[in-house]
Length: 505
Ligand code: FAD
Image 1 (cartoon, rainbow, N blue to C red):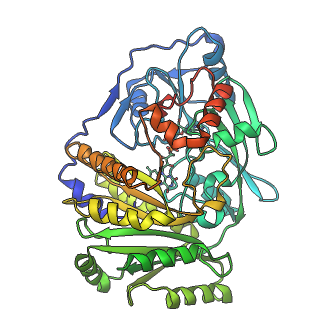
Image 2: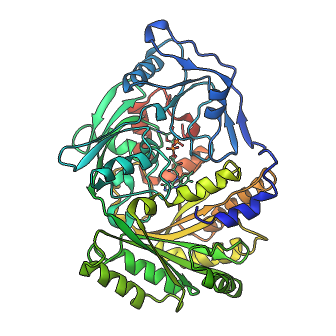
Image 3: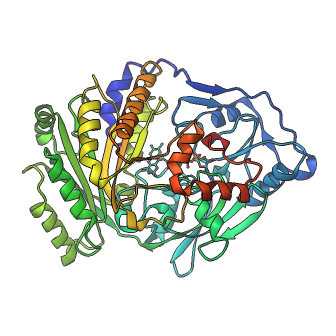
């Protein structure tokens, strides 16, 4: 996400070409709601067009109408009617539509524009915030930080919604310590596919609570989430260090994610810089940038360790000690370290800067054939050799950013719907490629080759933000949880009304 120049270079030539959408569904269905429901469905071409597309830019799925609810009661009325009324139509919650393959739309059905429901209330004791499902994380950050508190787990990008990330997992560089966003929710209000509004938590309606977290929108619409808060630090010391040796890189990453709060850092991620892509050196001072570029050219792959230590007062001994240790004991290439001292808000909102630049160049709304994988730690070297070296590095060019960092399984709760590998430590690998209408299929074929390689070599990956079109792939994805997942569907959405764009049922 951060490698702006890489993305720009590879797609500039193609920007004037409109994407040709690989999958499409045109809707002719007109949904007429009874007047007594007192709901207004928007059907104007501009609203329908927005709701038909998403960030992936490879699908067109056209709904019959869009509801912009003024309260959760409107969602309740719509779902109760859909569940019990004479006219059957499906329903998809859509927040920012930052999905990749039409997951937030519904052919011929009703899209609920969740961004119409955005609201944040911080509790008096500041231990949690009650947040409406369509609220953007960046607004949660603004509102809570103003009151000196903050959620503890973040995605890299904050212009995505609370309901949208809780339906997936909400992953990022803080989760090694605090777990993903789904691990930091105390309770939810959910409107189910049966048209019931239910509060749920680990104690109250636990089946619904755990089902919805990572549940891909299958069981109900999250209208409110109670999010855990903690102290909001004032600033962050944000480091990037370069490695040419994969084993040294992963050893340091794994050591960092095993440290506790006082002795460790607060955020750990990593990226790959490859010689067949354009290397973004902008984090380094101008005097070092050509050295970084040469390093990548000479080694073919350079590994970037990215960490942050939050602080309020830079003179507090623990902050000083952690940073001292970081710079002295890690095995990065001597001299290849750069530090930025930024506000907590700017650190968390760092991807926004890239988005603004890309938007100003009309390079944001291009096809994004992303592949997000979790890879077990014991197989990460095989993955690196087989995928990074033998597949990615052998392409004529790569585009976008490749994220690569480990995290801890013990911060996840197996009762939730989200799926992860069955090992204590696993890696997040995000191959976040940008494409054009001309090469999107080529990139998709590379993604398929990666998945095939993992299958053939027994690397037990799990996909994140995935889109399968075959039932057997979903069954394999959920593994031993498939039975529970299907039962929850029967229980909370027996008519299979919700989020059909996920293509599960
Ligand atoms: P949508 O795309 O609108 O919806 C996603 C799914 O959830 C759909 O199936 C929809 O029907 C359902 N849904 C939406 N709202 C609700 C609700 N209130 N209740 C029930 N179901 C609902 N993800 C990470 O985890 N970590 C990252 O660091 C990260 N970085 C990203 C960076 C960029 C630039 C982009 C575009 C995406 C990134 N994502 C990341 C992915 C993001 O989590 C997903 O796109 C996710 O779908 C949230 O986007 P959204 O809020 O627009 O939801």
